[in-house]
Image (cartoon, rainbow over all chains, first blue to last red; front, side):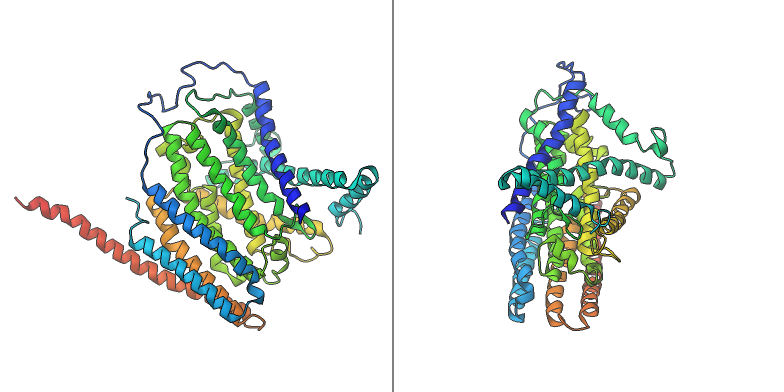
Amino acid sequence: MEQNWLFIGVFVAIAGVFPLLPIVIARILAPSKPNHIKLETYECGMETVGDTWVQFKVQYYIYGLVFLIFDIETAFLYPWAVAYGVLPMFAVIEGVIFILILAGGLFYAWRKGALEWS
Amino acid sequence: MSFWSNPILVANEWLTGLLADLLPEAWATLISTIIGVVVVSSFGLILVIFLIWLERKVAARFQDRIGPNRAGPYGLLQTIADIVKLLTKEDSIPEKADKLTFNLAPIVSMIAVLLIWAVIPFAPGWIGTDLNVGVLYIAAVGSFGILSILMAGWASNNKYALLGAFRAVAQLISYEVPMLLTLLVPVLLARSMGMMTVVEMQSTWFIVLAPVAGVIFLVSSIAEVGRTPFDLIEAESEIVAGYHTEYTGMKFGLFFAAEFLHAFTVGVLFAILYLGGWRGPGAEQYPILGVVYLMAKSSIGYFIVMWVRSTLPRIRIDHMLDLNWKVLTPISLALLIATAVLDKLFAETALRVPALLAGNLAVLALSWVLVRIMSRKARRERQVFKKRPEARAVQP
């Protein structure tokens, strides 16, 4: 088991080196003549007005919240699915009830209008 | 066992023996791990050079063009020429950008895709590492891609890029829900999260046991990659190029390569989870055949992704999110319940396959009827809404 995670750890490091390599090569090969106008924010030739990092539509965050709940609850279902082979019917029904509660949460968010884009 | 039937195993044994003689055990393990990692990850990277050429060629055929045909035979060296060009292009970092995050984002996007390849079973015994939580691992590292897009969009300090990143948040994380739920169906049927076990358990392919789940997995994976018709995160007619507006040269190239590799990885995952992975006649004896089978099956999923990309127009963001939350997510929840109950009821009997198939089709039929009813109701509401301003206009 440790060997498996050693593999993943080494993989993360090497997968980081591979994309770094072309960037380093490009830094050596590519010309570099920056000037103020070239490094301005690109907006199809218009000058930028105001700050970019401002408040945004709240709907994006609501989707984020609904996702978060679903993601965590789905993560809980994975152990159930692995143990499925040895579970009796009773435990399977329990899992089904859990999924139904999950579905209930979805319909609650739906009725509350959290899933409307407007 | 001869070298040609199982070259990886033979090479691995030779290497382990060699290292065990030369070095203490801990170092030998580390070095053989590093060699394994380099082999698996460079396979993905070499593949992407070919994939870009393939996709351009196939997309060209769909649009009645020839595609790249100048560099090398059949234009095969076109991608190499592109890489050379990208390497010699100036890399400009906007003055206002958050420099560290800006530079890190393309690297993270590439890492996220490459990491999936660590648990891909190519053939019996040919796997980077057979994690016992393989499927969950895929779900986990898959989310890194979203992070890289958010990093890129935020760090660019460009309004279009940030809009693209916000759309990515809404879209990618939404489609992660049906993807996670349909990843759960093969886990349920195989009773294991290990990728190797999932393949070994598929004496009947899971696409037969759970066809609807397979289709939902493919659709939500296309949305995860951010391809047409779900490419709102880089909609060029609305937000220039989305999150990578400010990127030039090789950093843009990395985003590009990561997207192509991710699209093929979707095909590979679809093949492993639903089309039986490396399974095929003779694959047990000659693992090299298993790789051929896996690549052939992956091409099916990849071709569907390309086909959809060249056929369908981009859909509107509210339609896309409605499709996810109001259609795909409830259906995948229903499928999960149907699969769990039916597989338990008919576990060891001959009726298992027909029962699961019937359950899937019943869920599909039921959801089709519900969608029809709901869309009629929504249309009626829209018409009422449209009439109201006219009625007000005629009043004095």
